[in-house]
Length: 209
Ligand SMILES: [Zn+2]
Ligand SMILES: [Zn+2]
Image (cartoon, rainbow, N blue to C red; front, side, top):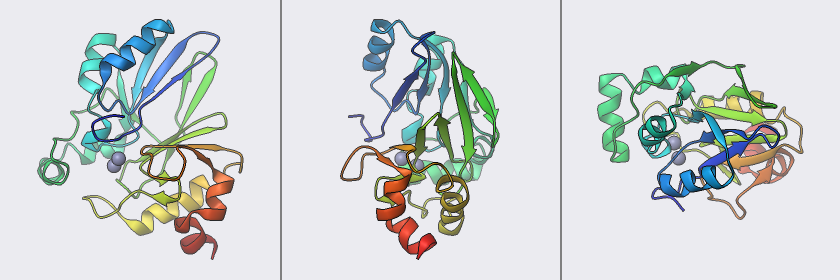
């Protein structure tokens, strides 16, 4: 487990060994060892949003692997506003990330080997939160957890917007889509969209009634 209990994911194309790191949150040595033993060529660092605990490993990994950091343009802009930086630093006890190399937009697709990584903008937890969809896998960051959703009381958060994102962008995906959340807060580390539609109170109470 990482210092802030953030789930870091390493996603690789089995054919080409090209890979991405999603939300490097510390413990870079472990990650680098895994990259080396699997012979992976990491192409991008992908952040699901700009909260400090999800971007801790950005500078080290960017420098060592010589790869670009990617984040949605709205969070890149938001967390580089001086007043937001100050508020967010107080809230999380760490400064937000520096400007990123690649600013993502909703619908962008990153090609990594044979994998297509689709950017789905899901604001609410932060203005530029995204989920990354890779085939039937959905990396949800702090937008959707197993049995819960991200908090909306931090600067830039909005419960209404978060619920709309889940309704319009996530529960429309195939029910078998596997949810890989940014924190392991639920009864299991992963779930599916179908299971969350049955059990997640943010969906059953706020959306489906
Ligand atoms: Zn967060
Ligand atoms: Zn988080």
